[in-house]
Length: 182
Ligand SMILES: [Zn+2]
Image (cartoon, rainbow, N blue to C red):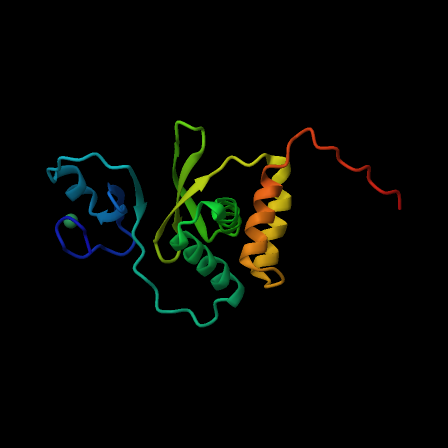
């Protein structure tokens, strides 16, 4: 349904999605492009992008459990709104983007040089607002290993969040042990 005129959105037709900053978070609006262009408003969107509306498909019973687990974990972690989880949340979002479950819609650099990235779920259209803490590229692999351990259930969330944080903040001058000769 169009957030402005209240009429239905048309499957496969263009749609404008908007994030409106509110005291308690962001309100997501989806509207007909004409409605967005012509409706009067006294606020500026935090972010807006144009996409193609996809009517929600009937539930897919064949969808793999693993994918469901990864994006449900992301939903859960974002709902916790815990700064200690920021590294895990970000790396999980990157992994979901690489698996084509999420698509990045916008990125906004903050004064402290972190970036707020806005991802959209390709199937459900939900938006996920994720802080990119700007992990050094060479540390990303170690953090990813922690997230995989969390997904596979071999480590708890508490273990993973502190180890991921440590891995993300590993200094560049840390001594790398020489590779063992095999
Ligand atoms: Zn409309």
